[in-house]
Image (cartoon, rainbow, N blue to C red):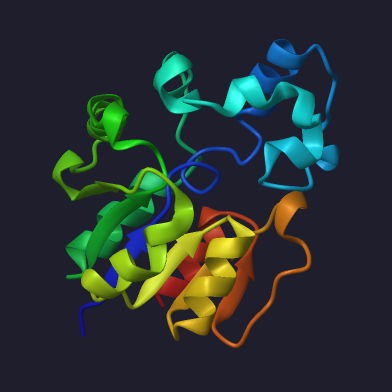
Length: 185
């Protein structure tokens, strides 16, 4: 039986702490991965750096071109597709950088036509429902909670900023090897 699987990009297909060195450089702070305990950068770096977050995707779009895909991601996605599953990339990135996002997806051997940019986290549940998502691979705690409440199974990549998250439909994993074991039994 085939499944529709939605996959977040930032923090899920790439290291959840990828942004930390960039944000440290922009703020002059030395935040460690363990201190990066919120997806709200104001909580971590302080509200005096609000200017960074305004149009971040556009002003710092070069960052998205420098990201490396996590180990085993492409392999697992290819295996899922070969087994008949449909995979969609659902991201909170601005649609204004779709070309960068799709190029990155393509450069990693994946189908750029399956990218859905939402320009914020607010639409992940509705997009998951539109795509008839059976499983959503995510790192963001708010998204995981909302997807869980909507009855969508969530595979949550474990990181410092989602430690207190659990739910009936949430399975916590440490890496894509564990995702592979769950999805390709």
